[in-house]
Image (tube, rainbow, N blue to C red):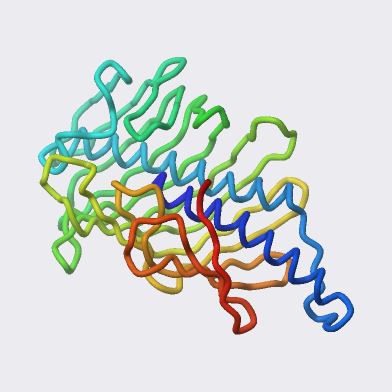
Length: 279
């Protein structure tokens, strides 16, 4: 998940830079392209993407470690990083509390603290409903509250594990009094590396849509229009497209041909421009 967020977040910032320049250049020739963007607000929304997706990765990783350990024995939790408190489980209902204490650095590089609470029912027809919430949780110093529901399929129609997440998350950003909320649905299909025992060879296909609102009134939506591909061994999305809309302007981000690199393309008004996804 961290891969997704970093890609989308930094792409949003690059997209902002282009749109600002494009709109300024066209001030005298095309008034339809004139849109005022707030760099600060766009950056906060990008940060929200990163925080929410990264936190969700921790939730799902904790569940897989507990209930599906044969699928990824080598997980993202280093020894002595977190305390797992488990009741029930197996094919029946149960609960999981992951307590990270005051600070814990995951193998992904994320620094987390606080708790994640999960409760779930029995497995019925190959599916399980999971409810999760964050308790005094922080992700890289940012507060994360709220939670959501997960429909966990042991095998979808293609025989792969899949999670459908409906989320409602509130983020308290460091360095500002503005808060953010993200609501939406995300579907992640685990297409490679299942059962290998090594999280670094895992590949996921992502679909979904979400909306992020800031407390100052700024809004942004994102819709996956071509399946996003995430390799856990790569910091960036390697292919797929997402449509991003904010303040009346829409563009398409193309993440490439499957190569692990920091490059993508923004398509706007029929023109293509390179985007650097990371520093």
